[in-house]
Structure formats: structure tokens, C-alpha cells
Image (cartoon, rainbow, N blue to C red; front, side, top):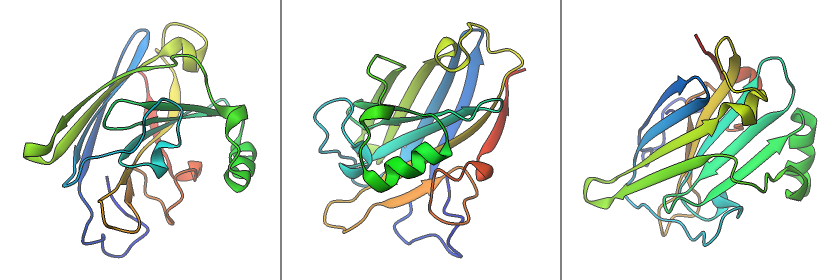
Length: 185
């Protein structure tokens, strides 16, 4: 993870690594996140996790579609699941802050977190069913646009330190043209 919109990363920036994999029907994401103060104030699923504490985010869009997914995971394994119809929908919702129409109510994906304050790290493992993204079971041959992002809060600080695996020119995680490409082969 990095802060490509800055000439030099913030002093408080903590690194993170993201690994991906897949099996016929499922997409897997594993993240290792360095963090000196691991916490969230989130108490239930579907809250605005990025405003409540540390959050790991997964952005996914099939290259043949305008719709895309945004999945959030907090250190206590609470999740927020969103599906935007297109970039215009995301921009409109960003302005209005009304997320109801894009929330996915069911258990769209499975995750597990491990919080290890003694080594200043937390870990995320997510399994996203291919049928959610592809509307078919097998992911073979698919191409997706992907990005993994992070909000790293520290108590007593005014704002979180944000970072992404994408080379964003400005700190806007929805800039899809800067996301990476994942080929399922």
C-alpha cells in the first residue's frame, strides 16, 4: 500500500501488504496491515466503517460492466457491502451521503480478522463468491479492475492516514482508471 498522491508519504504512514488468489468459485484476499493503534468504534455491520476507525477496503469491477463493488472490513470483522451501478451513482451518493440504495443486505462475502497489537498488525482474510461478481460459478477467464485501500486511524489524531494499492493521483479511491487489472487464468 502506498500514498502516490504525495511526493513523500506521511510520517504516520504504516505499510500494508495485500495478496489475492482464487479457486474455481471464489476470490480470496489476504491483507497484512501494520498498525500502531488498532481500533474501531463500529458496533454492527453496514455502518460507515471508514468513519469509525481502522478499515480495509476492497474495490472490484468486472471489466465488461459499469457496476462495481466496495467491501469494507473493520478489525472486529464487521463489514459494509456496497454495489454501485456506475461511477455517476458513486459520485451522487458521495455528495448526498445517502447509501441506502447501494447497500447489499445479505452476507455477500465472508471474512475473518486477526488483531495482534503485540506485533502492531492486523490481518484480514476475505472470501468473495464468484457468483456475486460474475453471476456464474467459475471465475476462469474473467478480468476485473481492482483496488485495495485503507483508513488507518490513531486515537488523538484529527484524521486517518489513508493508503491504496492503486497509483492514485489524488486521494480518491473511486478513480477506477487508476485501479489495477486482475486476470483469472
